[in-house]
Image (cartoon, rainbow, N blue to C red; front, side, top):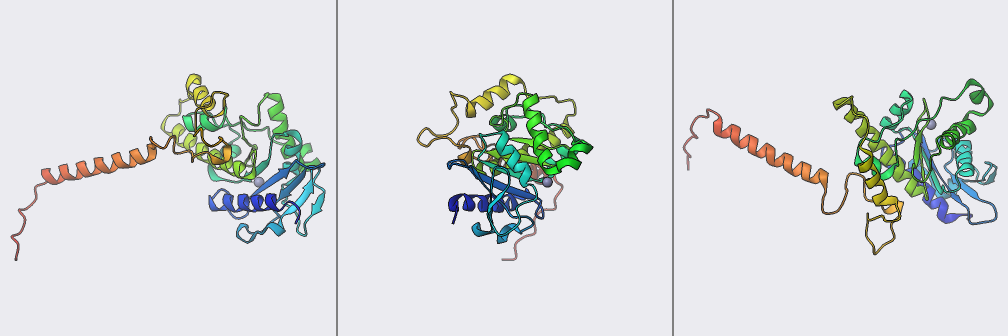
Length: 288
Ligand SMILES: [Zn+2]
């Protein structure tokens, strides 16, 4: 079968966005591209098919213009956004579109996600930008293709690097994320949802917060992506696919775990204090 390995990667990426809760119903799709041959070939999910029942044979193979090369099912209705992004950004090896809850809320609000913390800075170099809304002419002419065009226009206008910023919010719609492989694109879509949720809650707690100081965000981004990157193990090459989950910064300093343990200790101390201070009746003598 043509592009067997990429088909399997794309099936797995589509299943993974469903497993991670990023694509309610079938509101999401993943694709991958093979640029090694004489003509680049895209593998994409078929339209409206349940993620759990997808097989490599169901995948649709198209050229860079979206012309079907192999496949018996109709491709995802977002195909023309994917093809445009692959044409505009040759660094991309996989693209994921989701309607994940918090990232979509920011997109619907037409707001970029400010960099408020180190998890954001580890993965996205600066705020996650939001596109312009599509004009009436753009919608009428070619809505799906122009969804890709507004993304490309935004990156060109703001001189943004799609490798340093592996995701975007389409105004009034939802996020797109990408990476060197379909699996990396899923990882970025997942991190994007996580930092969207964190930013939402951070701004609820402190509405005057603007951004993480630049010297901290730069340190974090370059720790993972610069020529002097120190994150990860030297024995195995660093890749976006093998990044640790965003909640864990290093194996020896697991913040969520420390937080949970300190919470339990505090609860135990508080409970014992309450018990000692309570005006409790003396314990009944044992019958034994
Ligand atoms: Zn959508």
